[in-house]
Length: 354
Ligand SMILES: Nc1nc2c(c(=O)[nH]1)N[C@H]1C(S)=C(S)[C@@H](COP(=O)(O)O)O[C@H]1N2
Ligand SMILES: [Mo]
Image 1 (cartoon, rainbow, N blue to C red):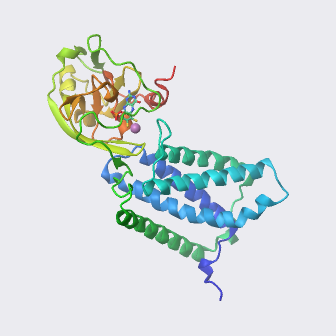
Image 2: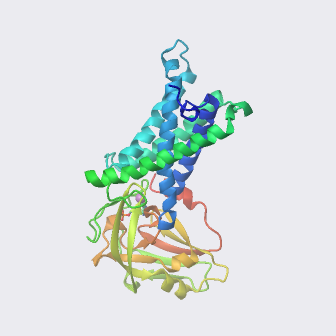
Image 3: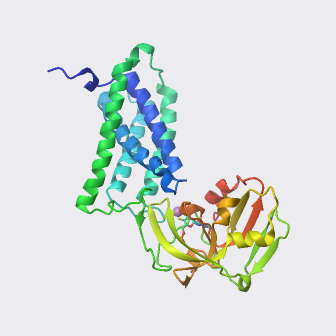
């Protein structure tokens, strides 16, 4: 019996165009997800997962169509590149699915989710190279409007159903993937003082900070810049907040320390001050909009224990709703600025090297 038209393999040009759109979508949501920590962004993670499953189906169709070329006589650099793209794509999708079902991998400072991000970014680069040799625009006659639209609707529905089913399978099998946050992260060491993972992104590993020679500078676009010695810090604030690292774990604690609002009040920011940057002894730094910074905390203690070196003694930023990489450790300067310092986006990658 003939399959209904919308179930037949799509036109090659349409399939290739869909793969391009699909990879673009999954890459974009993947990158945005790394900067998303609030539940209002849950849709980014959800659509990334569903998009990944739809993409898996499209990749399957594509591989079925092109696999015979690999064994053929026309071996060339272009084919080698295509094979590499296929392998890395399958790896990116496979590592994402494995993560969702609770798998782990120990890659020194990194884990399975970091591998997933790395492979995903590699797909973007390899696909760009592949398109240099292979790009063809679909023609008008390829598109077959209504049928294509039906197919896509079906693909997205199947992807969403598969994603939904995943949650039930995880729950029923009680896998490590069952209790993921909406970000995909799994709980580790909550409410247990310093006993949660120590992570650096990428190479930061300073010597322990000597409180006697350390001081905190608060300056920039302010009327009264100041410098505080360690004994001058006044713990005037507490916050229950959850640190959610993009390598896939989260930990919730009661943090105590100095409220950023009280520091700002003491230095009297200029009227046009818009950002507050937190800088580590290593040069690692990140900024928050000034209103949000007022709600943040510079912690000296976690669950009633003094912060230990790995977690940023003497002072670390607690930025509720922000991903872990923005919670700067070993803070020695708070700088108020009018414009965002964009060099910080580079600094978090290179600080600690050399
Ligand atoms: N100075 C500095 N602060 C940093 C980092 C870093 O590499 N250097 N890593 C960040 C990352 S990626 C995370 S997830 C958290 C981890 O904090 P923890 O080591 O206390 O768990 O610190 C953040 N603060
Ligand atoms: Mo992190």
